[in-house]
Image (cartoon, rainbow, N blue to C red; front, side):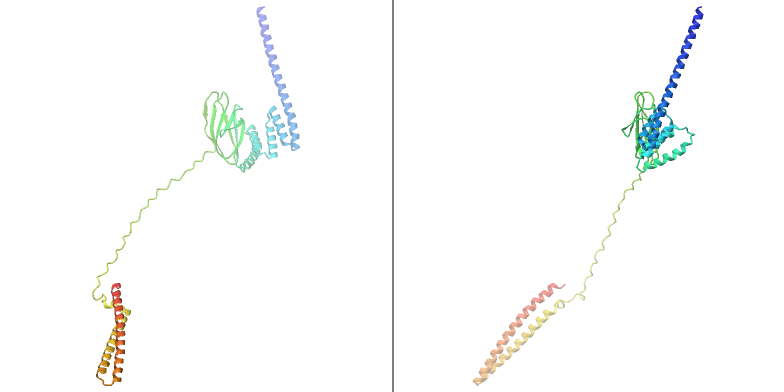
Length: 333
């Protein structure tokens, strides 16, 4: 009897477990069907807004549908709406999410890859490139270049070049790394956050830093002072021979000689006048006629006066000539 009761108890527990399991599967199936129904409602609303060119409303409805049913095709619709709005960043980010969600063998990858490249080129024209940060688990805080950009998954547009990344989550190790962006090329960074504390320095990813090789500085210029050119000594003049050296008289200029000559001529004239005066005086002394005496005496006086004047002029010119001789001899070498 006791063994039979135990057998019945085991059978009852087994039936109870099977019933609970069937109920849970039924509830899950019901919840899944409810989520798909809600997703369908939002998807229909999104299509209506898209046809009416109300792209912002269409994006909201497609995102709500994706939250209920994460079908990758909804990402494609969202990217299309962003592209219609002219939102290059939003379209590029969503197209890239769509490609990540597709199987690697999907034929759409090639077609979407062309759209992604066109958007990357358009973004590069603005001087920007896009980086997307993904983490396991999601919801980690992201800092790029010491600025918070939200939680993972996160996308950001940055200038090409080198940047710093910091990803943190409570109860997980912080991850820090550097990354490089190229112009016209997007970058995906996947971060696995390990349990624990501390900081992990991850290796660089993306475009490698460009090391500019500076040219070696030129050797210092050694300035060699030119040797001074010795000045040629001034030629020593040869001693002047007595024959070559001019005489003292040759150094007297012609005006001096003229002055001396005129003085001498006047002196001769004065002497002649003086002699003529004496002749008239002698005649006056020897004549008995009073008239002749007076004439001879007057003539003698006239000649005496002329003689004195001539001697005076001769003396003056002679003195001037001597002065000029002194100047000529002193000024000539």
